[in-house]
Amino acid sequence: MDVSRRNFLKGSALAAGSLAVSGRPAQADPDSPELRTKGLETHTTVCPYCAVGCGMIVHTKDGKIVNIEGDVEHPINEGSLCSKGSAMFQVANNDRRLTKVQYRAPNSDQWEEKSWDWAMERIAGLMKETRDRNFVEQEQVNGTTYRVNRNQGMAMLGGAALDNEECYLLSKFARAMGVAYLEHQARI
Image 1 (spheres, one colour):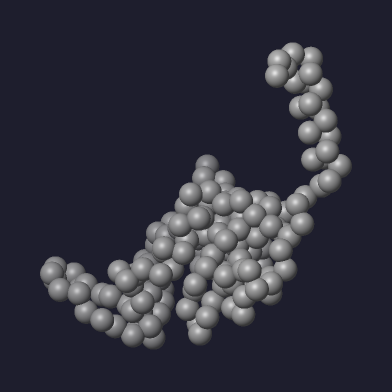
Image 2 (cartoon, rainbow, N blue to C red):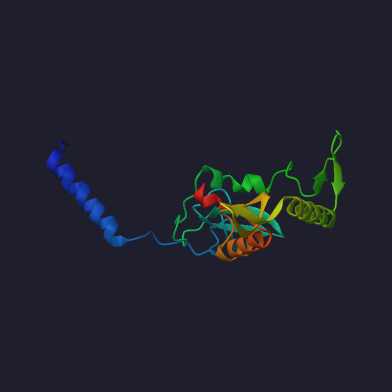
């Protein structure tokens, strides 16, 4: 069969028009027997890697992740995921993933297992010590004294996995600590 350029373009336009009129393909029912995710708990989340905020659906069974896929209902990615987002299942189910706090004391070559309570107390103590050591109440510029109340010894960085409310709380906490270097992953 000999297809001319004109007939090829007509056929292509007809196919494209048919797809445009039909809209999105019908979505499978999550409880249909053909699906491997039937009977699993379903949770929605956001990919933690970049600032785009792609939606993901996580399927769990007995508290263990068994499947992660893009959320077709999410307005940002409409079900597609990049290579890092697609690999989230391997990150979540990895035998080498740390699940307990590991601490190595200064000048030591051994790691110790510590409790989460110990880690939180240690982090809070170090933050307080850093704030007290680096806090500047006033600064003099051209003979005028200004109240600045800033802490130049630490910085805070928000991440793409945080929602608006979490970012708001992080920024309020940073400002209460006097942190001058406050940034978000989306702007870097």
